[in-house]
Image 1 (tube, helix red, strand yellow):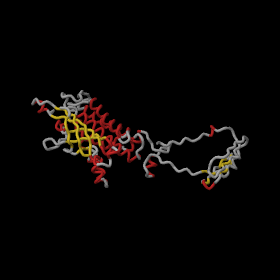
Image 2 (cartoon, one colour; image 1 turned 180 degrees about the horizontal axis):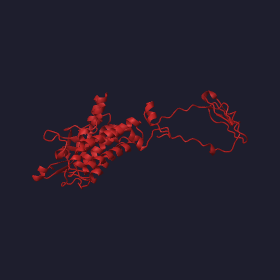
Image 3 (cartoon, helix red, strand yellow; image 1 turned 180 degrees about the vertical axis):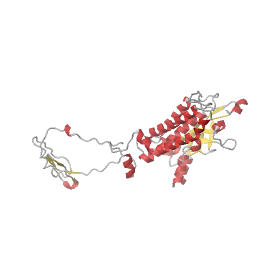
Image 4 (tube, rainbow, N blue to C red; image 1 turned 30 degrees about the vertical axis):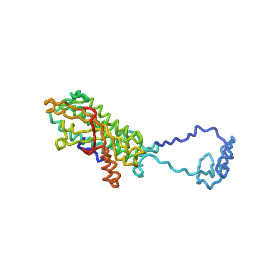
Length: 363
């Protein structure tokens, strides 16, 4: 997943029922009088139904309407025009028709309809994982099996960094799908949960591929962190303003002057952290502090096989730091076009290397 990071109410109409009305009455004397449009006198004599003399005064404030019924003469009933209400969904008429709910008249909110809106994006994610894992079918695969990998202990293979990679991948997929759902459904309610469910599902699919590897296996620890990553995306997009204040971000520092896409050195290069963005707070948004972030994260080092064989003690670092909010900088100075906006969105998930002042609070 790290090789493919993204460049990143409901209205209900309840009609009245005729069966709820009282027995037939004579409404012929109903009048509405008063230049101020207040109701002055309602009279409901009981006998036959004759609505022919219903009037509203002054009529100039109303739009003329007519109702015709076989059993009642409604004559010149007048009514005030009521402006239409805005519903969830795209503003484009064709798109609105595509997503209109015939029952509510608003945006369809079912999981199936929302998933259908991003079927191509989700399909691309699944195709990517199929392409990157398909070779395992020809590399002495085994029947799906499980294994216990542990969490963050020094005796684990990757000191827990691989668990955070699972969380980050699930988070990024969920965020990507949420972004697309916002555009395609007009930011309909509940899309953050649909996006998180699909992101979690995509990572379960990758776990199946791990389960057929002779040296791997289905890991419930991985599944748990897949859920945490997708869950944080849902939380971030549910709490108003949280996405403006908090990012889950990854910084990859080159190892020995180059990047690696796999292996323990690949995990050693990863710095996973939460970035608290001061730009998200009203009192700081118009000050220079809007370009500053406070960071809290985790990384590990000295856990490669040669390091362990040499007797070097693996190190786990919880760190705090201060960094620049490059996403905010990009939006302020280069966000006027689509490329600037795309770069600003990507920088909410990726931190450029060597751009944080940090100190370790654990060894």
